[in-house]
Image (cartoon, rainbow, N blue to C red):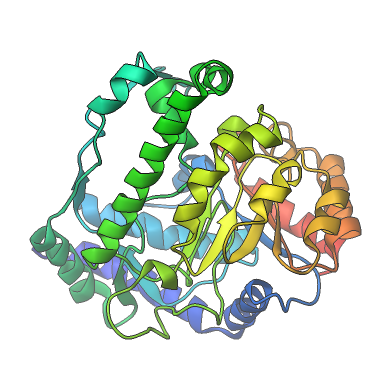
Length: 410
């Protein structure tokens, strides 16, 4: 397969621009700053990073997507997003001269298919219907997932990208095929959120059995990717629930180790946002013990997303190779700063609402000042995420960055 020349010309022009971005001095300085941050040697003001996420659907119409082939259009969007983030948003996003393609991988279910009902609205709500009816009787129906890699199709996609862009960017396979080792998202899809919480009181033995199954299953799942040599280094890109993983303490695509990539050479990630309503000790009894064996497999770990971490710190702090911690919008920043100090990366997630709904500059400035007051001298990054709309005003991302640079003095 080969793209039409029209599409090739467009992709190569964009790839050439991406290569210029990766090679310029500003990008190299930012890469050094992220590396220092993750090596716990950061100095200067917090780094700023935006993650448009769902709002990309409001940004993409602002730039032309001109390729005809569907695969070429996907790759064109990916390249244009990098350029947009650098040229328009102008945050501290850092890029390596890499173009990533995914492998063709399929996986089985857990033995019982999930049941999900979605609204007809774009980005609308959904409901997961529990598929287990009795923890004491139904767990035997579950089994480990299996993965199947279509290596021939994957290599064909890789070869197409290499032929089209390989002299401009280093074509690499995607690094991982899962997001979190947190387990509770899956537990809720199987058993339901209310059931999960109630089982902590009325069926603790059954819940322990479910969590032990999910922990063992996830361990089998991630180590299967390792055994089949389907992993890639992730220290060159996004990690956890927001942030960049550059560090001297893990191999990377430009400084690889010998042999296939191992889990111990990668960043890991876990969270448990869904259990934010349970006590720290319930978290420590029913959730964390089943996450820890998974975290032990990774070279560095990132913990947390939208849940406040400080109340659970006596458990989270046991995470092997813990390096980055999410500081949620509702976290007490003074408490977090005192707890974490300069021993971890302080990943502050400001409240996205003042950016997403009725842009509120006063609230945004207040957020920046609070973080500067409490964590300005720490290994801090401020990461704007969970931005699923900006009310069709994409310039809000650049405005957030500009306000941040004013308040933080960077």
